[in-house]
Length: 154
Image 1 (tube, helix red, strand yellow):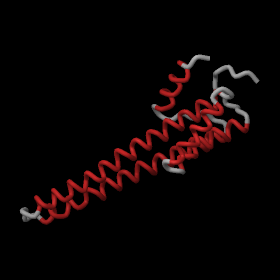
Image 2 (tube, one colour):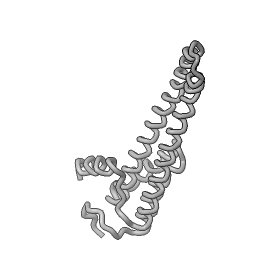
Image 3 (tube, helix red, strand yellow):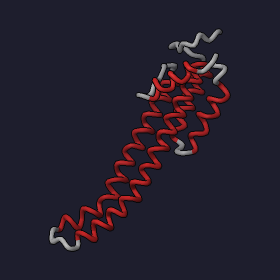
Image 4 (cartoon, one colour):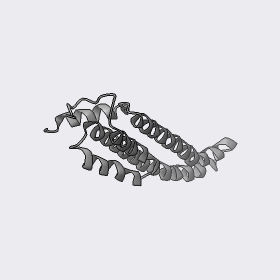
């Protein structure tokens, strides 16, 4: 079967499984980046569908890793804010001013956990849709990856 460069709604079973594995690797934080890389390197010349799905899964994983590092920096910085706020709050007679700074790290960590859960669910949706042969695209990432793949020489 000749690959015309267009992703059709019907794909071979092994292509669907590889695409689903690339997206599903989001369940393995940090180490899951390796799976889309291996799939993309081994399949980029064989299947346009698998190449596209694994490359966008890789970009999605890298985005999560980048957000993880930013989140950790914010989390540790929130401790500085917490201790600084508690120091300033001691001179205040307002009860909330002594409690609020102590909530900063928990608020950052809670928001960070919500983002992580969203990424895992979104990646799992991508895995399921790829497994059934649908053309899955992440918001923003799908168009970015497609534009990069079109620039590659044939």
